[in-house]
Image (cartoon, rainbow, N blue to C red; front, side):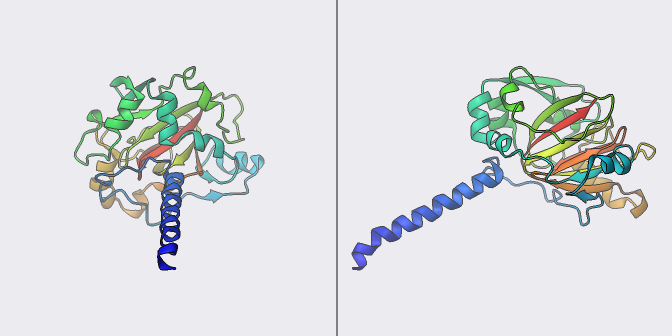
Length: 269
């Protein structure tokens, strides 16, 4: 009897292993790879200071947030199909040979580098080196070829809120743990995390942050952030997969990817 039961036991164990592996792939899209982990400073904040809203109407969005403060939106759209298409395996299969443009991760993004998407994913998508300068760190975000990537973008549902006189434009990106863009500002927009987690730091337009334009967000978090008084600290929060951050016009912001992250922004220009 014991010998007859043994194949069933092995089958059960194999099934559990497959399910566990599939569950992990579903959770991170296959983007979490073996190897060195993120730097120790890459953690969530102690306390999120940006409001989360799951029941926000357009009227309240305009009245309370659109022109005055950021807000995290939950449950407004269903991007499960887009998320399925953004797994590591599917993006490499669909766009591996496509040429993408990388920018340096400094405030003014002077340098641009073009290379195949597969090369970026396989060779450059690794945790941020804490001592690297911004102009030595290449980052895939924006500069998307909308014609070439149209088959992906057409499955994305942006937040249903708009601002009068603006036109939405997508900016898609994938970046390693510890990477991010240092403080800068531009027009209003939304940013959604598809896989991973992205920590945001935000200041209103009248409050210029203390930062070096060629130091990474990780370096700022390690060197400058700990010395800030409570009144000098930014609004901050970690955006989880499926959440959308709205940031108003001209708000200073910096980002830090806590995991290898896939994300898409909708800029209102």
